[in-house]
Image 1 (cartoon, rainbow, N blue to C red):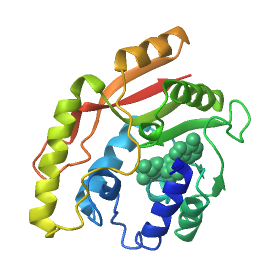
Image 2 (spheres, rainbow, N blue to C red; image 1 turned 90 degrees about the vertical axis):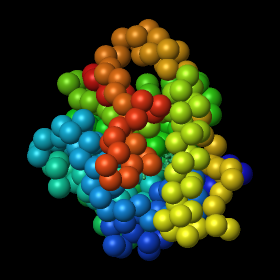
Image 3 (cartoon, rainbow, N blue to C red; image 1 turned 180 degrees about the vertical axis):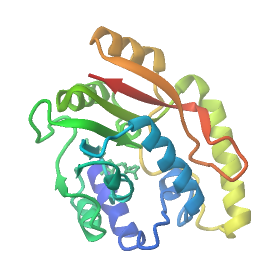
Image 4 (cartoon, protein in one colour; image 1 turned 30 degrees about the vertical axis):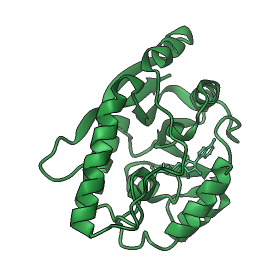
Length: 243
Ligand SMILES: C[S@@+](CC[C@H](N)C(=O)[O-])C[C@H]1O[C@@H](n2cnc3c(N)ncnc32)[C@H](O)[C@@H]1O
């Protein structure tokens, strides 16, 4: 299935389920219908907020904003909040929760913004679904283009190919946890229907260096986070790119 259609379908599944501010993201991670505990969401948003370091007058854009729940949480931290996604259904969902000042359908790689338009940009859990290095690289160049000089872009959750065994082990452990905690059985997914890319991190780093893009590499928020566990993991990485 084409990626955009898959996200339209996922958008239909999650429509209206964001009202209580708890989220079903784990569906595309491991299983169907697991509500992420609010605490986990708070840990993730805190980390993103700290890394983006948005000022109250800044213009922020969430690229691949999905149903807009992150943008809704980040919008009070900035002056102007824009969300963009290529799925019409997702943008419809984001509009329903009034996620930002502007919400529009558009594609990373052909962003409908002028050069140097934003102080901060977020692209979280998005590049993971682009299977080709060339698409990832084209997307990065386009996202950097719309940043103002001095601006920064946080690219979140890139699974490190070199550590894929740890990632698989964490998934298996989380699946077990979901099964025991939420009583899920038949709903558990064996395979993820959304394509997910493992990143060749040295290749990505050399692409950034070749293009003179300054960056900091950091461990990502642990998507399987449970209270008492480390809030970050080394088997996925975030990159903060600066212009
Ligand atoms: C896994 S979801 C993540 C959504 C949101 N960032 C979050 O963390 O909840 C990935 C989103 O990226 C969108 N997407 C994927 N490729 C895109 C592209 N090239 N341009 C715009 N949106 C894209 C999908 O429609 C989907 O809503």
